[in-house]
Length: 252
Length: 202
Image 1 (cartoon, each protein chain N blue to C red):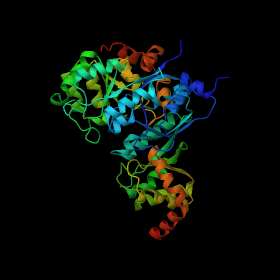
Image 2: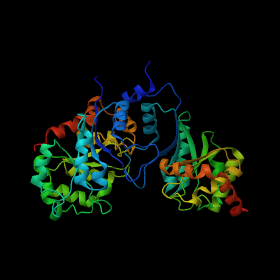
Image 3: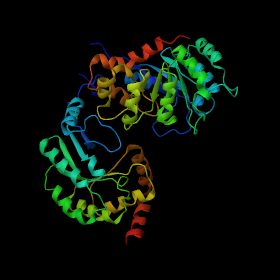
Image 4: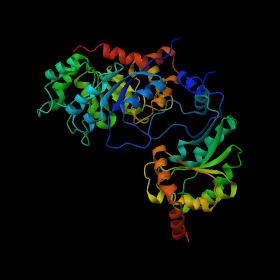
């Protein structure tokens, strides 16, 4: 049995509005933590892209990670209507030129404040769906019905739901059942034996390893997978195989 | 030699160190789906991780019937006396039952603590009906585990000096982030809290 290779789908670099004691924001520290926990790669976005301006943060991200091949950039995106963000076709070209294979949105009123209905984001989601670009979104950014709306309107869109809670199963399970391209990040999904239950009901391919570093500990994220009562093969899929497969399917 | 760090990364149960989980729930839950919250499933997971003992309360005690939940804990600690230590949960809305329920639960040797959940029971730890609980803990030396949850206000930590005055040995505040805030507030303010306590309680 080979070692489990961990590839984190959800880390952030850069200063944040609130930094709790013991946390960190430096890229070097993130890399040191990854090495300590045995995490080989990570998908990262920039805190200024979520907490200030996506276009500014996305540019800074490219510079911040350019020397580290194991850090893969995630852009935070907006709909294009105000002109502060390129139209979907322009965005696609920029993503291709900068090797960006996943995006994230922060549509909640407390953050970027836009509707995720098709009258606002339809063209953006059409492009992501056609290019098979994974779209990441935290659970606190949208209502369950809104998530249902996206998945219904764009059944081919790969959505990785991040920032889950231990108490989401009663809404999550019907969506996992209905939409084959819905995936869930592991770190917040902590119901007792929840990983095992999702593997059994929906398959290990629906789970994507994520740490939510540096808000949460990468060690806890690794432990959730290494100790999960599932097969070694399933652990390898969850830890990194599923994410690599998703990114390998992106066609920009 | 395999270090604990290496064992954790490989998912090997931590056998060489005593691990006691001080905050464990049993049963189904009102607010979420739990695939299997039975005593048997919890012990299996403890074995998988290398946890020796879990201190358990029952989710039903946080909801409709605290005594029904305590009964389930008594059953569990009888089934697995070496693996579970029980918390007797007290609901302050039944003050006339509190002394009897404490006596009943603590007849079981593996019942060693009291669980309070001010958030679910919608009363702060300063609520007068908790007083007999603190007195029982002071008399017997048992610990109290209090889950303060979302609300971390001054009033939530005021009873801690009360516990100190009553010579209760241990009060554990659950919910990590909030507990951290509590300690940040409490540690530099011991004198102030004691002064407030005397002002408020005498």
